[in-house]
Length: 180
Length: 190
Image 1 (cartoon, each protein chain N blue to C red):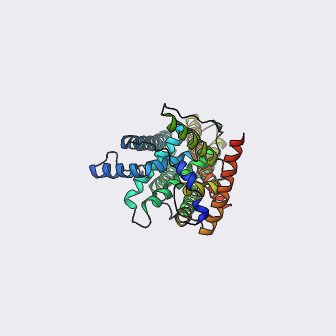
Image 2: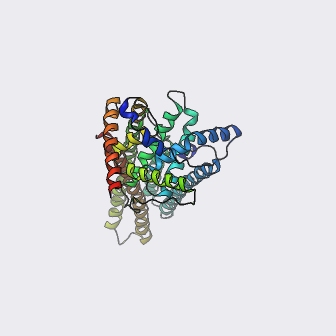
Image 3: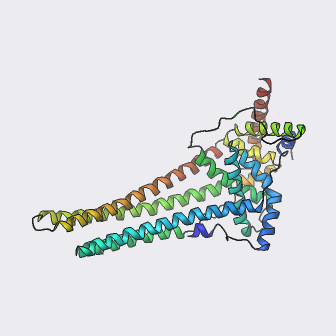
């Protein structure tokens, strides 16, 4: 029953709740962005993001300042994504990617346009090969090359090379779509 | 940050546009659902195991097959020990980075597959023993009560069901290992 016990206590104490709220405020948006960069289906992306946040919540007591909080969260997130992608690649694609991604809820016009552009960018990020995508999303999140190398277990040189290639591919992909 | 990474800035501004709101209730509910699912699976597994054990021992003792009773108890005790050992092992703690986490998880799947392999060996040995006992009885089929033969057949079916469960768990472990290795390869191949 160790895997059940590892899911954490069923009810939170006040200290746990405030710690979880702080963690959610700080890192939930990043976890959602990372999840949506690997999962096109919005429901699956939300599920994956929640998986990541639960995993971070469980692992939080083990954080010993060995790196920054953000890097620690990113490591856990990347591992959860790896296991999710490993399962998902064996399943047939149910929702084809579309360049025309529309925001679901009514918003002011500027916000809606930005949402479309962001969804558009996310769709193109998902097209990148895994080895480049992992580096690209962390660069977009604002991680430094050293932090990315620490998170993924690559050398800084490999991160640098992949970052360049990812940027070229992404820009070419976005420009090609704009021309169409 | 070097200039080449600085050129990500314009894309990064767009990337950070949207932020999702998440409540602690959502997370706690998600964690609770995961716990309930795992608990249900563990209970179903334990209940199934207990039922087939009781059934097999009852069949053996009811038809006075002393040797089969002993064999059944040893078989289920071994399988139960292996299952408990696999369940007791804590989930992989994860490595320092993504690649080492994947390596640790792949090693864990190898360990799981080794335990399941031992279980399969024990099951086949038990089958062999059942066949030996049954063939001995079939030699004297005229004087062997039908209940003994039926009980041997029932025990063989129960052991076969345990083998099928082992095969199912083995396939699942192999699939998980393949998917982890696949991601590892894709991540390390530039």
